[in-house]
Image (cartoon, rainbow, N blue to C red; front, top):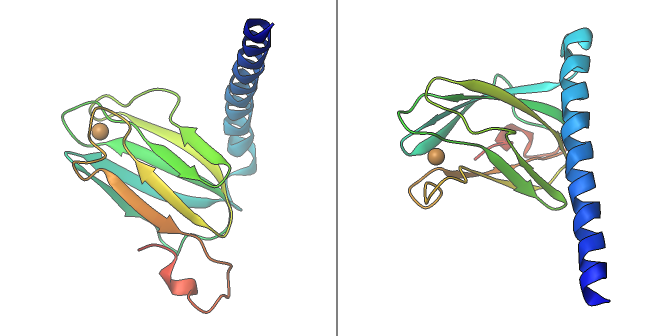
Length: 143
Ligand SMILES: [Cu+2]
């Protein structure tokens, strides 16, 4: 009985992950049609062993596209984790590869890190804090 329940739950989780991946693909093509005007855009560079962010304006709430480039010599990836959010690049990045990941950001803190080996502990980790636009520390969307 327990085993069946567990299997059922695994199937549900698997289905949710599959659905999320499919939605991710659709949102990517949808992004092309909308020209990305309303989205926040953040360029991310990965290397040994750090994560750097390049954004024209402070990060705020809303759909945010992270364009992640591996400028290092090892394989890396990108995870963003917050309350109710856990997203990872669909595939790891080989050197000089670029992939994008879209995340719906809310006013909250997020951990961003490389999930490969112990890169996280070697410096490939960062915390971003998203604040409401117009909030009194609006300028410090990232620290
Ligand atoms: Cu890494």
